Amino acid sequence: MQGPLLLPGLCFLLSLFGAVTQKTKTSCAKCPPNASCVNNTHCTCNHGYTSGSGQKLFTFPLETCNDTTSSETTQGRKELQKIVDEFESLLTNQTLWRTEGRQEISSTATTILWDVESKVLETALKAPEQKVLKIQNDSVAIETRVITDNCSEERRTFNLNVQMNSMDIRCNDIIQGDTQGPSAVAFISYSSLGNIINATFFEEMDKKDQVYLNSQVVSAAIGPKRNVSLSKSVTLTFQHVKMNLSTKKVFCVYWKSTGQGSQWSRDGCFLIHVNKSHTMCNCSHLSSFAVLMALTSQEEDPVLTIITYVGLSVSLLCLLLAALTFLLCKAIQNTSTSLHLQLSLCLFLGHLLFLVGIDRTEPKVLCSIIAGALHYLYLAAFTWMLLEGGHLFLTARNLTVVNYSSINRLMKWIMFPVGYGVPAVTVAISAASWPHLYGTADRCWLHLDQGFIWSFLGPVCAIFSVNLVLFISVFWILKRKLSSLNSEVSTIQNTRMLAFKATAQLFILGCTWCLGLLQVGPAAQVMAYLFTIINSLQGFFIFLVYCLLSQQVQKQYRKWFREIVKSKSESETYTLSSKMGPDSKPSEGDVFPGQAKRKY
Image 1 (cartoon, rainbow, N blue to C red):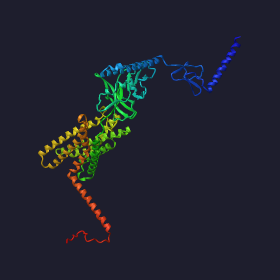
Image 2: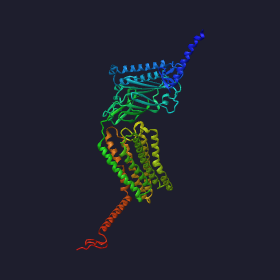
Image 3: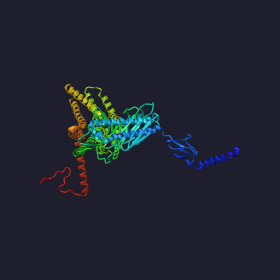
Image 4: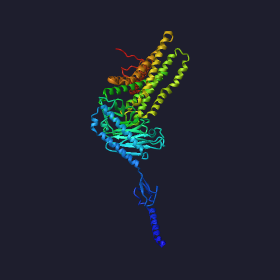
């Protein structure tokens, strides 16, 4: 009895299996909910779901895809939402902010920022299997990232984005060398916190400038270790609140906590790039950040602009004439003249590039190249000044040292590698270490952040000091020699005159940058005029001292002038004779060579 009854059921199951098999071979249109078709042959569960059988690919139509979102992850999102709601209630509590003074407001904001960062990191680390968590409302947006693989990929960088603001941070900075347990990074953006901790908290606030906050306040934090210092700077990109960028001053700032409250500070943060819609900053530590902008009331002084362009144009002409004189006047060609020539060429190229490229801030790469070239050319000019000082010292020593000729040959051999090689090495190291500090928002020159300007001012001050010592030594040697020898008085006096010229040149070039450093405080305007005028006269000074006041050069100039006049006279005579022709007769008033004109 049982056999006949089982037979129809078995036939039905076999038929069903055959139909299903045939169906899956042609199409997988009837995948279960939360699943997708693969190659029209198999089904697979969507991200966040897993099959009941545990298979990644399946064809059985009664398979189910279950939600893998754990209760811990759901709880983590709820906790983040709770943090966001608590912050929003504090932010909208007008009584809290109105009744407090300025110092209390900054302290309260610091406490709130720290608490939010700590709670967000704690929540992220509770659910490490959820790599990324995002949540936002009208006041706050949060993104967290958890790392559990100890940065298996070298040079791995994470990008976090909230409310059109972003942060790039290296994986190694997140884990901080900790291979035990997960690590997390949090990036938080506050939409309206800038209305409370606004630009009035900027520590460098200038009463002459209108400074305002032009971005949302963002916070970045890593855990479980709350270190703020990093091995490599993070890159922050802010979207502007006001898109019409009509300002010259842009500041990347962070919320600096002090014993007397907190304030916005630029320490460790510097500008990389700015356009009408975004500002990009680099910061060497983690904190809360923002972008400040200043509508400066100090417009460019047209008189200074005219002095700069006119003075540098005259300086370029003088430097060109001096370089041609050093090249063509054979009577003065020696080691000293070669040094003057290289100095003139470096200053000529530096001033020319300054005139045509100092304001070309876009594109950023071109501006950085111009800044690097100016850095190199002006450093090379000062290096050739140092070589001039060394040559003068050796010349003075020639009066007392017998083997001076070998020293002089050594000087000729090393001056070009030193004159052009040392500045190249200095600029190469600076560019490799801090490439983003070449070029500012309004000038193609070195950035003032992180003391980068001292990559130029440091060598300049060192050269100035060494040359000063060398020149004092030269004058001391000459004084002793003058009192003991009379047979070489002319040589000594020539050397002394050369030393006087080089010393004057040192002060002309060196004092220029000293005046540039003194452009602060009430005397800034006066120092700016002195800096511009003296800087513009450098080429004229070199041409005056080494060419116009040199007797040998004067003789050569007179010789050239006579040759030019003679050549012009011969050309006119030839032209006149050509016009008269061979059959023309001279008039009575014509006078031939050797014939005196009669007087009646």
